Image (cartoon, rainbow, N blue to C red; front, side):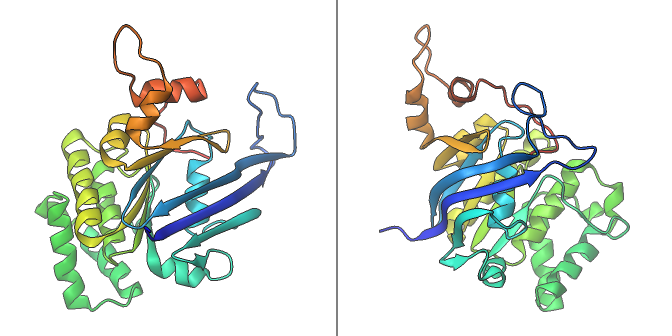
Length: 275
């Protein structure tokens, strides 16, 4: 039997409205003092699997990632990473995972090398060995050598995202949580990141949970995909089997986007934030 890397059972998360940030129902009217962001979600991610999570903005997919990453506490249910509970044993979970999000943060005045070297020290890595490893990772990601020692604030959004991915790879995590990692990347950089994701799965056995707005990326990278809407998982299967949920039209094979529209009634919009 395949080993389970991530086990999510009836995960539930509620947020309260805050002044100035009213939560609205689907019809656009504020109806309650609470909003359910993750609504009794259950699934397993197998070791060395690339597991995708698709959903419109506000569907709860980024909240789900934060729950797995121990950045938020679930209000109900349970989540474990290699049998370590995210509530009872968060430190053990944190040693196994790393996370890349669309809102990656840095010391903007420092260079990529300085930022990554600082991260390496926090992880307890040998400085000399870490610098060699950093350069190797940045080379694999196609980061221009001239940019390695320049301040991060002078880099493009796409280049900064590559540095965020490099930082996550330093610890060779058992589980890598990628929350819209290729947002803002040009097509070539996107392919380089996708190739690296496959390499981590195939060569290192890394388990990867990926949220994305890119249907082609999800279709080509993911072994299985969960589609979320309004905090719930509305479908979960391989990309091939998900496409069988929609009837072909005019003889054309349904796409993942067709499935997504059928199940959620919404188009994917690539935005910087998500619930």
